Image (cartoon, rainbow, N blue to C red; front, side, top):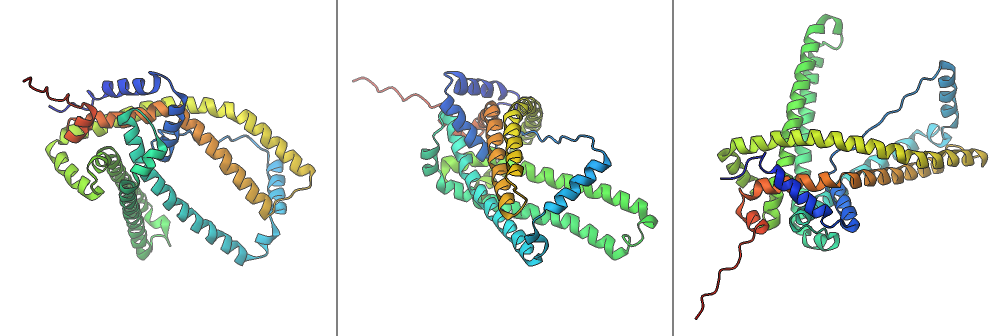
Length: 350
């Protein structure tokens, strides 16, 4: 009988301990951190907003300072501003497509790293380009489908309310607007949960099929759908257990990340403060060049922070793929034969 979702926890813990600590190798650790970050396996990263009380006079002077220092090239040339916005949108789309492709290939490299207990990025990239491209197209289609579904879920009700004229006289339709807003939030929650489950099922149960049998994501989903119908309780238990484990791991990772964040903010904040003072002493003002420099430096700092958070999350990066592998192995014979290879048959004497 295939093991349950709870029974797969101990083998996954044992696997993570053996891969990371027996022996400890920092080279493997940082490679797994990089692969996990690019594969989207980073459990959670804290988002901290620091608010401090400011009086009205100081806030007004600060806004005036920002307004006075805003580059005149943008305020006096709307066409230039529109071009910059269009360029930012185009670059964002290109980066989204690029990182989706990198994410697709890295997902297979992470799978190989967990199964073999060795992480080799260069060799893995060479081997996994073909299945990574197939997963890339699947992810693009899934993103488009989710975008269309969310757009329809929001746009159709808003258009209906607009056609009824409720926005023109909202006080006359308070109850309808409130109930409609609650229903809309519920629909959005259901859609987000639906696409999240599809994403989790794809990376946990379809990617191993694509890696071991060189099939497409659609073929993998056809098989998986049959297995889901035959073992509804097992896979439902897996999703529920993974949610519980993700919550616990997320809390632990957030605490560790917050500690690392405060430690990193000391040198980064000091360097930034010195840079601001040096810029003011040199007579620098906000213009296209200084804004571009600030954006580039901010991106570098963000990448450093994300990589540090990924280093902290390496145990989680290894545990969750191992958890899915051990759960799925006894339901998928090719993966089981890879994890537990059978000894060769003895050769008869004579």
